[in-house]
Amino acid sequence: MTVDATQAAVRRGRPGYDREQVITIAVQLFNDQGYDATSVADLATKLGLTKSALYHHVESKEAILRVALDDALSALEGALDEALAAHDVAIDRLRHIVAGAVAVLAAKLPQVTLLLRVRGNSDIERAALERRRSFDHRVTAIVRDAQAEGALADDIEASVATRLIFGMVNSLTEWYRPGGPVTPDRLADDVLRIALDGLDRAPRGES
Image (cartoon, rainbow, N blue to C red; front, side, top):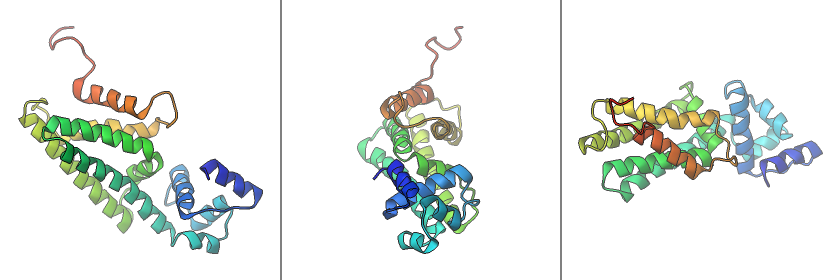
């Protein structure tokens, strides 16, 4: 059953969900009105369920947050592990992980959006932020290796380059919508071109 179908079922007064559907709708609600501002009562109302029926699917609001953040982070970490296993050359690893991160964002847009909005207001959020930092540090090491290989300019601090690259990737959550005219593969190619190759066709120093 799609999200639209489940919402239609709510309107008909015959809601029927599995755990995954409850989490999907909850994450969208968190993104729409903020996790901290969303109560269990809000979620139950959105789903057309009683609180007790909601708790049949999920243990708590915090459990939904934990599952959603882990889903996004595990996918990103998996893409990084895949890049490391697939390539020996650092620049190829970097291209792989940037493309992989774009693919994860496209496939798990609500979860990644939620991840990017956490601020460390709970143990769950702080643990997620620590995993994000670890991910960033591992990518920074790849950038540093690519600089050492001569594949990237070495006059930019590797951690700054990483933040700039992933700042571009993360900004996709603000406007990219799956199913639009730009496919995830094309989107990844465009991000790689701008982030690593640039847009200027002229040699440096020419106008």
